Length: 433
Ligand SMILES: C[S@@+](CC[C@H](N)C(=O)[O-])C[C@H]1O[C@@H](n2cnc3c(N)ncnc32)[C@H](O)[C@@H]1O
Image 1: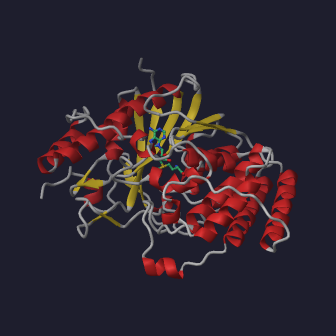
Image 2: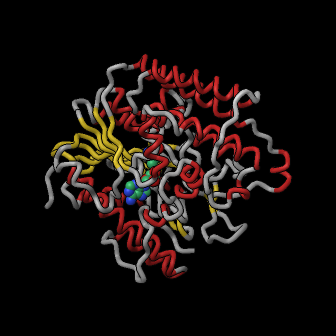
Image 3: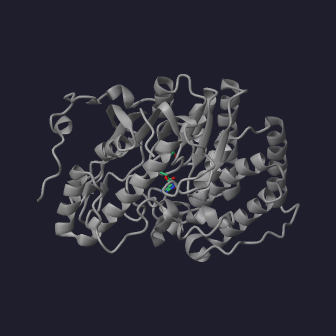
């Protein structure tokens, strides 16, 4: 088998090499990752809140604006706001934007509690036949394949209430609990990000009280919100945007951001984390735009017919070696890094001189070869006038990732996936046109 690029600090355990080193104090192995509104809704490959918090403490001491170009469920935005730093996040996935909005909203707790009480009364009266509701079941693709009839009916009754909530922040709060309920009451295998259905036996045994489920989630989220309000009632705000980081946006002026804290996808959605598939049922139940094409729009979603060199020898050498085994996979990998390079150019422009870009990345394997995303991130930023501050290597104790993947996409042939991630910190020294 062809070897991966030499990575001395990994090969020799915890040896410190330059500014790249293993530091277990970044593992946060025993920390509660579900504090504050971080308890809202699960999301694939979330950032550990303690990592975001520590990066902001170390590199955003005097920051007034944070940007997360792959904000996902909004972990870094919440942490910034708690430190009175305003934040901007963008994400292509509408479900991610919904969760991030709900987690960072300045919601009026008194208004929320009135709605929660109304909802409890509504569910009670419907469940005990005191009220009948003309709830419409939405046109979710293959609805009967994913949901039993009784689950469909109960979900439609819940949705009927939510769609009548006028306060936007309150509506988002309910939608997040509803979305999680959609996923958990469906016949999808919850341990997978991809949409895979339970076996017939599992489906037979699967009984869900959807009304209780959504109420448990609402109560849990209300507790998280209370903790957040008690922690900082006057916290700063977040704005959640919807633009592709590969294309960039004029909405964020050049040289306006003090710190970027983000975790980009590990690779294209088709072969790594299927964000689109993870979110499809929720998005369709909530009448959110067509989610089926989402994975094609994400980093590396469009593959060209030829493998273009990325321009970074260490990475290009690995891509050449992959191409010797599988030309199509090599093109997919190259497409991902071409998009990643464009997105870094766009992100770099938004940062002020002296500002920091903190990227939490994973070095995944393709065809048995490690893709050096940490060093590629560093290279792409250096091209934009940044200097490398440090790269911390942390173990991933909590992140929900498959421990093994299928590098060949053939059933039964698996390889270990990442157990470490790399926190790459770069400082902007000059602006590149
Ligand atoms: C690793 S996740 C981020 C998780 C986030 N840090 C959290 O704690 O929830 C990467 C995110 O990048 C988003 N994404 C992928 N390609 C994108 C693009 N081109 N522009 C904007 N967002 C993109 C995905 O939808 C996904 O939510």
